[in-house]
Length: 153
Image (cartoon, rainbow, N blue to C red; front, top):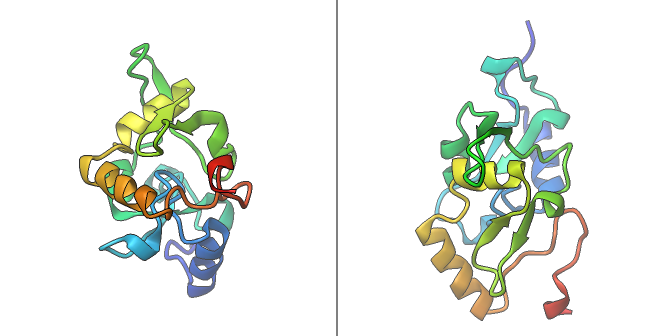
């Protein structure tokens, strides 16, 4: 029977790979009031396996909104689109920040569906981003590229 629980080793590897940031909304664990989860991108109930290629670091808000979803509705077209998959898709292909880095903008059907389904612009999260941005602590270094946006260099 396949293992459904994430091992301590897998958890450490996922956290390190994500640089302590939610792989969906880019929240930083150091500023979170709840611990982050290592979640199954494709949920176990939908056939997902407990292996590194199917695990992502997720804040509680994103994890709770995602739950067992793998697709959502694109608010621009009304069509169903697959949700963002952090292991298979670069974040920058599907999302961008607005000018003050407080809102995540969906660039594709997948991006827009993910923003809507996971509520990536939750009110309290937007306020936290605004405060952290003012302090020079947001956005975090990009997980895929290892550097802050041009503005911080």
